[in-house]
Length: 106
Image (cartoon, rainbow, N blue to C red; front, side):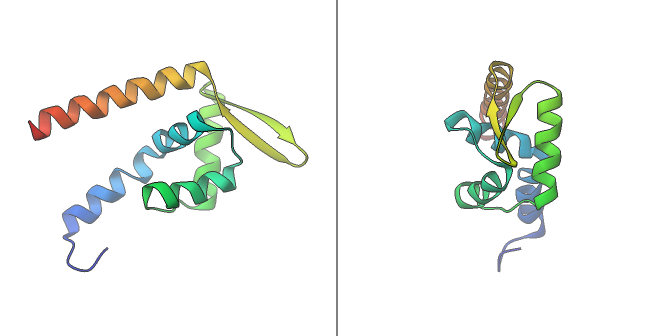
């Protein structure tokens, strides 16, 4: 929690971070394929929070299992790429966020 920040805002930030980590991952993969450990660093740089190592892998595993990302091996690492199905899911998430923003802050 940041100094002077209420518990409510800290909780909101947490829920809008880890709870919807898949949205952040798909957002980054739309721009370029990536290794899981690189995604973790990019999430911190671009979105201001750092998920745990295992958490990113778990989310990627689930996204891959549902067909939203694909993975291919490069040497001993997996490189993840968003699929067309993942792009559609991201677009739906974007629409949902915008609708909620309009309802809340209109």
